[in-house]
Image 1 (cartoon, rainbow, N blue to C red):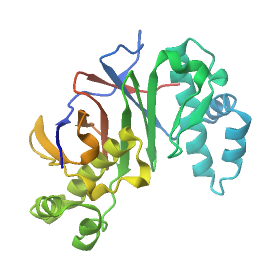
Image 2: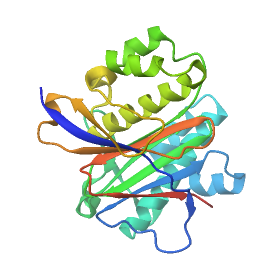
Image 3: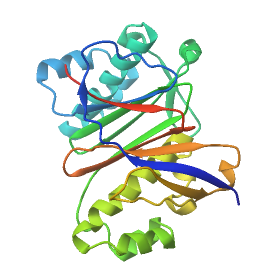
Image 4: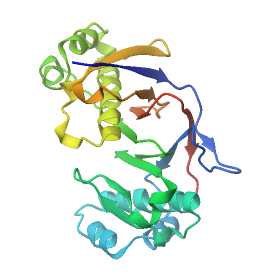
Length: 256
């Protein structure tokens, strides 16, 4: 087995409203926080950017909240990518990898803009980077999903020990802190369900910043990754992961 060092850091940055240039540089990782609850006028505008197949997919959702979430996440993603590519949002085209992870179509490949999207309950996060793989995860913290049986199913023995050493009142927060860090890395690697959560190990210190940890995975023998916990809204946990360690994070708040 090979050892790769990962940095897990709790970012203290606030979510900034964009008032000027928000174009990506090579050392940037941008994470946009997008509330699902957009006004109807904005929802109509965003829906107008969707492709025919995206609109058909939205129409197949049974629940209105799922339709709204899909429209907002894909519509805002198109706007953000359009800004980076100097292109109209409705002209952005996507392709899909072997794990169904979306990426920009070949016509836009030269820009080398990578992205990832996550949503849970009323929150959407969109992560963007240039020239590096990226993954983001946000989870609504729900009680009752952090018991020993569930933890042992998804986490390594050492992670379970660390989690259950927490006071009972903090275990739900701890569970989702671990979960989002691991999910963000899996999404960055593009492995989907082919990489189980217990295939590697992270150490998430809920008290301190810049805690170096190690993961054990043959797939990481030539790779370097960094994970950072995000300042999620109350009741949520979130993290972003990206290739290499030479990047700085900016957290942006979407506004119509």
